[in-house]
Image (cartoon, rainbow, N blue to C red; front, side, top):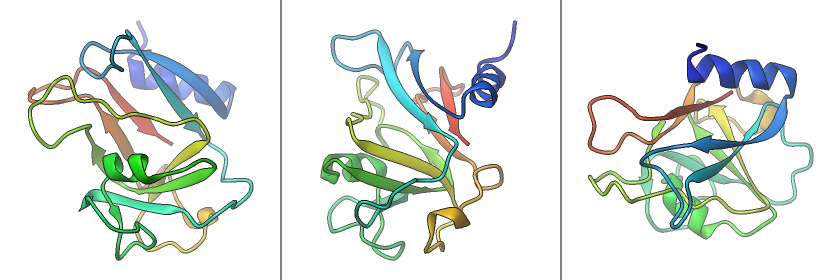
Length: 152
């Protein structure tokens, strides 16, 4: 059996931009058994507006308009209005910093999430997703993660 992360990487090598339905046991949308996750390996093709910047333990208010004023992922997702891009600094992101295992990340249509940033970039093509690993994790109050999705 192929480990989940290797399987995701294999799928990504076959199709650089795809939508996966990831079966999870803890990180689910209300009333659903599947979490839609957009994985993209290509650079943002058109900069429709300034991106929202995201860092681990970022602000939960404000404009998210620079690395200096970056927000946490949950707040940036709430703030984003399509079409939009989130530039996410390397790190591990969970739906909550607490222990609420019903918490989830509410993804939005038209909001692209790009990981692989060090947190100093001014252009999308400066990101290095193979070096600056960005992970969405469903680990909430567990020693071992149930599902980990790494954005390349």
